[in-house]
Image (cartoon, rainbow, N blue to C red):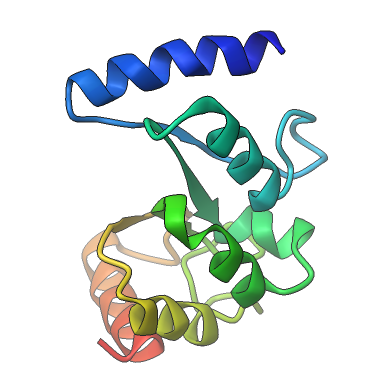
Length: 141
């Protein structure tokens, strides 16, 4: 209850300054607060309009049975993505499906940002160029 009460206060403050508090669900091996994106979404709904959620592909790979259904169910409060493959490498260097979820988000009109939260597979400039091409191809952008 304390978390919700504090988030309600933060929600109001965030809205006052044109911002939001974002909850990141983290897999069960690293946290116990919100492991699934739906857990974070429930907290956000109870806390108020100034609280939103983000989805991290690394953690969803561990916790979620169906990433597209997860993203669909939380879309009204989804404001950020962390992009990392199952092995914490850059997307496309492991086995996570990025094409399906990213294309789906595009079809819904997702207009927020995503951030690479991963280890690069080589020299940064070349790896980032490769990653840009991979993500454009995966999302259909």
